[in-house]
Amino acid sequence: QVQLQESGQGLVKPSETLSLTCTVSGGSISSSSYYWGWIRQPPGKGLEWIATIYYNGNTYYNPSLRSRVTMSLDTSKNQFSLSLSSVTAADTAVYYCARRPWLLVAFDVWGQGTMVTVSS
Amino acid sequence: EIMMTQSPATLSVSPGERATLSCRASQSVSSNLVWYQQKPGQAPRLLIYGASTRATGIPVRFSGSGSGTEFTLTISSLQSEDFAVYYCQQHDSWPPLTFGGGTKVEIK
Image (cartoon, rainbow over all chains, first blue to last red; front, side, top):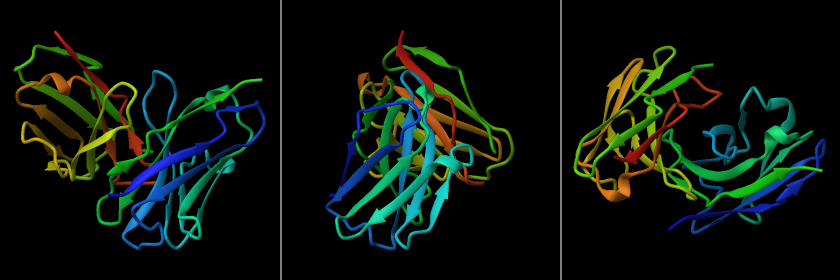
């Protein structure tokens, strides 16, 4: 069965760029059957969708973050990544990667999440 | 952007009782509504999609209903493992995908 695992910086300084990677095992990110996404959750708060990417590289971003976000695929490593620039304390959150089947506009498999803290 | 509002924020229920959670959209989302369950320290888990279809492996005590702007998640007989936070999410008009603020179901 497919599994997702986030990795990346746990601590980022204000104004710098947050970079995270999601490694997919048990399935291929090159499959046309799936989209891949990032969702975050500030401590004690709700969920916020960040971005989604399709196997062909088409990306969809949250307009509130669009100017600072880049999402990409690395098919050779079966990974996808997130880059968020000019971070502030408001970007402190648990970041989840997740899978969205093409026909099911819902995230059906999630990574365990990784905590990212923005602090000097 | 479609705003999703969940109520109540906290629901206190005794084990074995029924729980009814509400989700309201700021404009019609048809049946393009999803429910997730999240337990402390865990990632969300997909419960319901298409407003009323249970995801794979979800017990029949979970049911979803509604369309347009008003949706309900019902847990017919709460089990100990059901105490968690529940989120709704719309995908009718995106980006952005938007989530409700969540309803915490706690033990009464």
